[in-house]
Each structure stands twice: as C-alpha cells, then as structure tokens.
Length: 419
Image 1 (cartoon, rainbow, N blue to C red):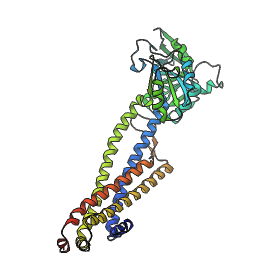
Image 2 (cartoon, helix red, strand yellow; image 1 turned 90 degrees about the vertical axis):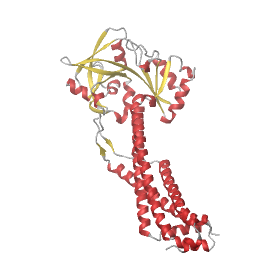
Image 3 (cartoon, rainbow, N blue to C red; image 1 turned 180 degrees about the horizontal axis):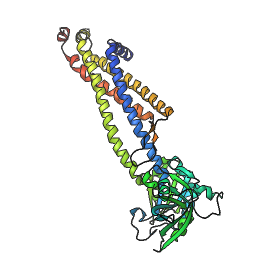
Image 4 (cartoon, helix red, strand yellow; image 1 turned 45 degrees about the vertical axis):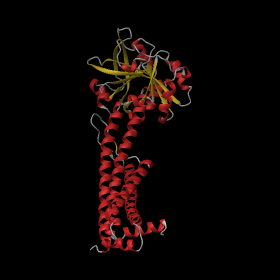
C-alpha cells in the first residue's frame, strides 16, 4: 500500500503531465482568489474606517438621560443630564475608560449682522474634543478651541469653530465676530457674540454648512443651564465596548447606572455604518460566490479532461489491484493540489497589490455627499486569507472527487477498451 506521501507525489506528477492546462487552471484560480481577497479587503478596510470614524464622533459609549434618544423634547434639554462632573469622575475611575467628554447639543440662528443662517451647535470640552476627532476633522483655517482653552488666546471673548460651508455662506474668517441666537431651557431667546477662531471640515458638505462648536461653558450660558446632552465615553479599545456597556447597564454598577440613565454603544448610533456594511456584505458576498463558481468550473473542466484522457490508465490501475477509492484519492489530491496552488498564488498576488496600494497612496474621489476623497487601500486579514485558501482547496478537491467517481467505478474491461 502506498503511503500518504507517495499518493500526494503521484497526484502532483499527474498534475504536471499537461503543464499548459494546469498552468491555465492555476492562473484562473489565482486570479479569482486574488479578486475575492481584494474585494473583501476593500470592504474590511471600509468597515474599519467607518467604525473608527463613528466611534471617534460619538464615543464608544454614549450616556444620556432616559428619553434623550427618542429625539422628542418640548423644551431644549428637557432630557438633559444633571451632575455631569460627578458622573464623569465615576466613569474615569473605571480602568477601561480613557476619556469622558460632555457634549451639549443645541441649534438656532447665527448672524454676521447682514445675514442669518440656521446652525447645529455643540458645546464641547475644548481641551479634549479635538484630540478624539483625529483625522476625521480637518482644520481649514485658524486655530481650534483648544488653542484658546490653553490660554494662548484668552481675554478676547468666547471662541467659535464653524464648518467651512457655513463660513462660506456667512463670509466669515478667523477673527470674525458672529452672533449665536438660541432658545433657552426656559423657552426664551438668548444671544451671545463669539469670535471665529477656526474653520474646519468634516468631509460631509451638509454638516459643514451647519456646524458650529463652542466651549461647553459658552453653550450652557447661552441656554441658561448647567445640564449637558450626553457623556461620550472613550475606551482603551473598541473591543471593550459591549462588555463595558453591559456592566454600566447593571443596576448600581459603580454608582453610575440608574433607571434615569440610558447607555448606547457607538454601533447603535452608527446608522450610516450599518447601512454601508449591509450593502457591502451583499455585494462582495455575491462577487465572492461568483469567483468560487468560476474556480470550481475551472478545476472541474481540467480534471474532467484528465479523467477522460486517462481512462485506460485507470483501467490498468484497477487491473493491478487498485480499488476505486484509491483511484478517486489520486484525482482528489490532484484537484486539491491545483486548487491549493492557485489559492496560495492568489493570496500572494492580493498581498502584493495591497502593499502596492499602501505605498502608492492612490486617492479615491469623494463619494456622494462628501467633499473629501479617501485613500484606496485594502486590509490584509490572516483569518480571511486562510478561509479563502481553505474554501478554494476544499471545493477543488470536492469537484475532483465528483468527476473521478464515475470513471473509477466502471468495469476494468470497459476502461481498458476505452479509445
């Protein structure tokens, strides 16, 4: 009886009999595998980027008063959070928590004296807010609020950062004084003059036309309140999100969670991320299935021709005592070798293209609704690559086994008489 190594050696020698046909099969398998890996890598890179952007924007966790996430308020900050400093201190005492940022959402009119425009404002902790935004908020001109908070621009009144779209509409530049008007928590109107310290871009034109950010104390003075809308909790690792959320939802967890509080994760807030992921999962899942079918037909065609050409050889092996199972084993290993070889070559090709894209720095044009492009890159994931190689190899082996089954089971006389 032949050892496993000898069976594999025989299968490899059989695969090399018709080198041109085997090379074409390997090329098709490699190209299909690389295409599937590159498509999946692009989708994975998109998921990672959107997840990072969403988590930086809202925080890994968002704490708010019960009723806040329903979005229905008769008066501003009707469902606002009280005692934000105390809650912040309790949250920061947890080892997995890196930062806690209070935010106050409000809206109203902003005027340059000649023209007024609707704005969507946020009161922020200027010392930390722009640290967490990272590359997802680009400074176009001037300085951010943290510059003023550090005392480098003190004594000149409240600072204001606006989106570049709003700056264009109001013809505002760093140093311009704008008037913010909003409804207070008591239902009356209030206004405050603020000096534009900087102009930023989020990459989303609709947001840039309405964006206004001020120091938290300025927003509270405008709305005549000491409340905040939410507390954004930033963790040491995004992977800790679900576990920390579950811990904070437990009654009496470190004195934080209570019936009056709600905890949402970044994923629950990231509607755009969920929509894109659902779309990409269907698109690239369908393309991956097409690639696997192409690879399957390629290997099946190659092995079908090999079985047809070697029918008399099969008969000779059977006459020498080989069982049908042993004959099928040879062809199955041959298909496994072709599929594995093509998949490994495709994996190397995909890795090479991914490295090239990383070094080349190719930029994609801005997608619909955005003003900034993004780098064309694909993620390289070891589990995804291993799964792709395994899937292609197993499908190739299965196709080879199915093709060789009929030839291996025919009678010896019939196989030897085959022309």
